[in-house]
Image (cartoon, rainbow, N blue to C red; front, side):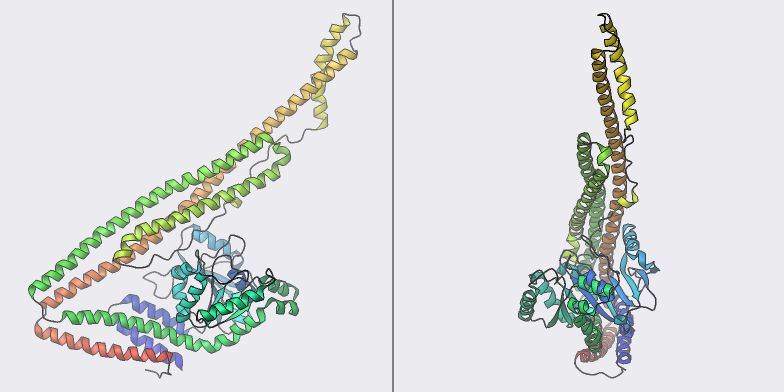
Length: 603
C-alpha cells in the first residue's frame, strides 16, 4: 500500500534526523507520520474577517460548533470530525516534551464557546478545539477546520494557517458575494495553490445580493487571470439553516449547498492520495536539505587549516556568543519594561473611558427620573460600557502588535524573519458576571401618601389664615383660609416630590458608580490576564529563537575545536564518511521527489 511506502520513507528520514541530532526535524516528521496514518481528509476553511466562514462550517455540519455573530471572530482553530456521539475537547499547544501534540481536556459540547473563552482569558496556550459529530458528510474521514482571520487573510496565513495549509487536502476560501475578490485575497490564493492545489472559492450571502451571479463571473475571471484553478460555489447559509429546520429540499437546493457537499464528498477522496504524497515529499525533502547543509559545512571544515585560521574562527564564534548574550538581555529588558508600562496604561485607559461613561450617566440622571426610565437607562449604560471595553481591547491589541515588533526588531535582523504566531486579543464580556445595578427605591408615590402630604402642608395654612381672618369677624374656615391651605398643601406636595426625585437620583448615581467600579475591576482582571498571556507567548518565542542560536553557535565552536584537534588522517576519514552520507541523503531525496510524479515502491 502507498501508506506503507510513505511511512517507511518517513522513518528513514527520521532516522537520519536522529543521527544528526536534529530533534526538531524528527519531531516534525513524526507529526507527518501520524498525518499519513490518519485517514482524515483535512479541509481548511479560511478567509478574511466577517466573511461568514464560521457560519459556513456550521451550515455544512448543521450544528453551531463555531461561534458566530457580529464582532465575533475565530481566535483558535476548530476541527470538526466524525464521532458516534457529539463531543468536544480543547488541545493545548505542543511543547518540546510532546512530539505529537499538546494536552487535551474534554469539555461539554454545549459549553464549547464559553470554555474556549475562559481558557484564553486564563492564559492557557491552545492550538485548537476539536469537535466530534455523527454526520454523514464526515463519516468517510472528512475533517473541517475553521481557521482564525487575523486582520487580513495574508496575516492569517502567516500567523496561524501556514503549516495547516501544507498539511491540508483541500482549502475553501470564503469571500462573500457582496464584492469582488480583493488584491489580498487573490495574492493569498496564488500563494496557497503551490502548497495545496485543491482550492475552491465559496461565496456566501447570495441572499443579500440580487446580482450575485455577476460578482461570481467577475471573480471567475479574476481567478483565471491570477492562474488559480478552482471551482466557485455561491451559497447562502441562512437559507441552508432554514431548509434544515423545515426539512425543505427546495430551499436546500436554493441555498447552493448540494454542489459544495458533492465536491467535498467525491473530489476530496480522489485527491487525498495525491495531497498526502505532496505533504510527505515536502517535509522529507526539507529535512534532508537541512541535514545536507550542515554536513556540507562540516565537510568544508575538514580541509586543512592553519592555527591562525582556527583561532580567527573561534574568536568570531565567541564574539557571536557574546553578542547573542547581550541581545538576549536587551530583548528581555525591553519586553519587561514594555509589559509593565502596558499594565499601567491599560488600567488608566479603561478607567478613563469608564469615567467618561459615568460622567454622561450622571448628567443623564440629573435630567430624568430614574424611577420611570431605569430599564432604558440600564440598557444604555451596558451598551456604552460594552463599547468602552471593545475600544480598550482594540487599543490593547494594537499595543501588542507594536510591542511584538519592538521586542523582535533585533531578532528579526539577526536570527529570524517571522514574527511570533499570535491571535488577536479577544474582547471579553464581563457584564454578565457583574451584578445588575440596583434600581432606586421609592419610585412609586401612592395617592394616599400624596393626599396625606398635601393635608399636612395645608393644615398650617388653613389654621394660620383662619385665625388672621377670624379677627376680622370671619369664620375659621373661609375662602381665604381654604385657598391658602390648598396653595401651601400643593407647595408641600411638590417639595416632597422633588425631594423624592433627588433621593432617587442620588441612589441611582451611587448604584451606577458601584456597578461601573465592579466592571472596571473585572475588565482590569481580563486585561491583565491577556497581557500576561501575551508576555508569556512573546517571551517563549524570543527565548526559543535565542536558544536555537545558542545551540548553533555552540555547535560551530565545537566543530571548529574538533576540526583543529583532528589529525590529517582523522579528517580524511571523516570527510569520506560525510561524502558517503551525502550520497545516501541525495538518494533519499530523489526518492522523495518521485512522490509528486511517479508511483513509489516500499523502501
